[in-house]
Length: 566
Image (cartoon, rainbow, N blue to C red; front, side):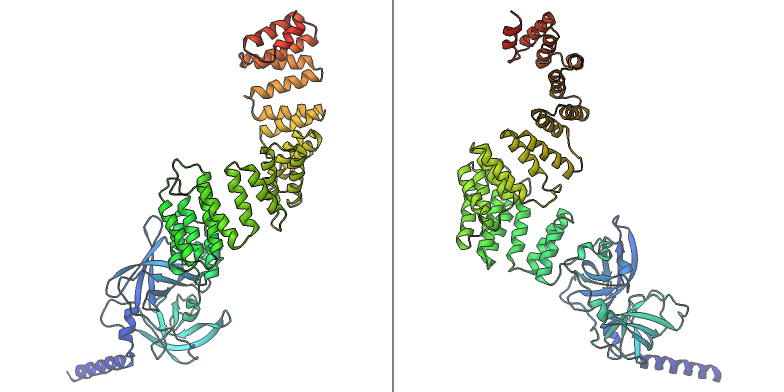
């Protein structure tokens, strides 16, 4: 009995010693530690782990691997409250840390203070586990080694035994400040040694303008926060427009406007998005955003120009009904307001585009000519001037001159992006009776697009080759057009006409007979067949085919009947 009493007293003393060694701050600090549950895209549980708050507004830290592949995540507090993870704020896969924000359901949450200075080797350390129990047994030990990470941050080796399921639990100093996140031990000695990534290093993780292409972040399906820097956030938003889904892009624009409410660019971008919705449901929101952009803008001309572009683009899409006063005239008014503040050539270019859309080609040409005499002169501005002159029925030589200036301002050698200008100049050359120059442009286009052309291209080039009297090239190109589109009767008739022209009458007759079998109502085939028989002096057959063409209302056959069928 005496021995039992002595043993009980000893255990009681040991228990009291453990309690005495537990720091006073543990009771409050443990409320900042939570459990994390992540889910995949099918809403199936992916991983469970730990994390902790480092600010009372929901900023938190955990391990990256817990979130890898996750489409959503929740945290569960020691009191059993569940809150969703709202945004990822940064991550590092090498040191397995992640920073994120929780959408908290209360005004403030308990949070740990991140130590400003690293603990020295040999100092005391405590690892604080997640617990739903009133009592908590934290693991104590010593800092064995402090290593440098990324220049100014730290990584710790601890003389401490880490219990199961304590990865990413906070490692604390004697003052109750967190200096590390517990990491899974991979070395041989896991009984007395464990490791921790620096909490300051985890806090330093952030989203930058280039984070959209960061594989570490791309492996997480939970939405990412915008960069804190306004300029970086603007670039991030610009890049996101072409890299994320429309739904996510809309969310990012909302975040931008909320984060930078005095930045007019956010309202302009969101208005552009709303105005582009095909069903027209976003127009009221777009209009409200444009009004707000004007209110907050420091450079009003930028906003007037943006409004003009949005209204112009909307009206150019030919909506069923005009929204409010969103007309070409209103767009013109806005861009002229911009130019009145600062007469930039880019504003003049848009003025020309709006006038062109209004079919005021003289006004458009005057605007384009102003641009072409400015530093903003480009392939596009000279092309616009050429099209305006074309519609004004100007001398073809003037149009060719403008297209020459257009092509001269393209990067050399001309790439696929600028190759369409070669096609336009080729047509201008054809209109100006310069088929050989047109043929050169068609060849240059073919090279610029690596031969990725359609049947119509070969037809147009065949016409240039024909007028250049390069008959074999013409025959080769029309054969290519037929190969790509064998159902087009025009191409087959053209091929037969070419063979007729070069004296290959038998080939032409065979081609036309084949065409008539598949298209017996195609009048031009009979007229061409009649011409073939004229060359072979078979006048009965010639006149019979001319008569059939007349029955099918061929408008060009009467003069042939009058000439050959008296």
